Image (cartoon, rainbow, N blue to C red):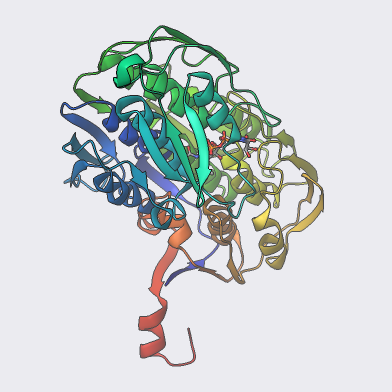
Length: 456
Ligand code: EPU
């Protein structure tokens, strides 16, 4: 198991190209199940979650080949996929439990093959994470849904005469107690592309990853409008064709590097930066006194953005931040922003409204000297002058990113254990931070134990 050793105190500066989006790429990969023709995705980052999906899809009859990017600073490699077997429709627990996004195969399998068996994902470190709304949406399109041995069984009823049936368009409401559902919207929208008639999704997720998926599906011949708004309209078509699509850049990776500039008083320029998808995050950083410069570009999802610490203000200002569905402040950046707020000049208030238990970083940040007071889904962050390095760990991807950020600014060395969580969502994070001037090393625990017994 690897760990990161971070020696804090360096002011980061330099330039990076933002990688392709993990959370866009995963449901896009599942859309390969909707066509028999060739399916190519570009700018796919090298991440553990992508590798997991590359393991799952062949079990469902999809041939997958990945060409790594020749330039490590490019947004990513190329994935080529093709369905070769339509009979295997079981996403097993062994795979699904390693990655919840595996649920995204459900809608495409059901729509194209009329049958899907997908292990029900359990809870995870950030909360319960039910999939009831996904199932409600697919049932509204006519699917028979049941549970067997921990698996979701979804079936399209046969047509009269025993012929294969088809899903039927319907008006579907996807709102839940915490807003809409991103992967639920992806599942229902994907399934509806091949349904008979028109589907209207009300209270659809507006996240940029849903817009990217709709754009890919439309390029394959689907008829989707309204993506990016809470009402998506899908007119079903008979079949979908080939695809060659470039995934959007990762707004959470970009937002994390923005926090790295803020917390180290640095000056970082990000290319391929989806500023259009990061308005709430950039607004919060600006209120803290961070200077953002970006030029209106032809494609505001691939802009160049410079993030600088305001040397006149000298101290970061405290703020209030509440996570919300897009275009509100994203839950996937809450932990990282909290690391920055830990060093602000006063009391900040952070409220989590999407995953109300997503606070694994709080106890670990406190071990580094942060002053945090949690009550339910709100944390009051009372800024301190400095953080102090310590051994820490968190069993959640974004909480681990928060600890890396804290380590970059802390006095002394921070040891972040279990970095496989980071590898799920950040490609070579330590190398990228090193190019900006950070002192950060990946250490293989087993090797270091062999070389220096007792140290690891
Ligand atoms: N929810 C329900 N019922 C459902 C589905 C969701 O009650 O059937 C609740 C969830 O428990 C949560 C809220 O609705 O309280 C939103 O969950 P959502 O379904 O939108 O989350 P998701 O689609 O499973 C994706 C991202 C997450 C990100 C969330 C919210 C992927 C692969 N995952 O998850 O990303 O936090 O949307 O934006 O796209 C991450 O990258 O670290 C990550 C966790």
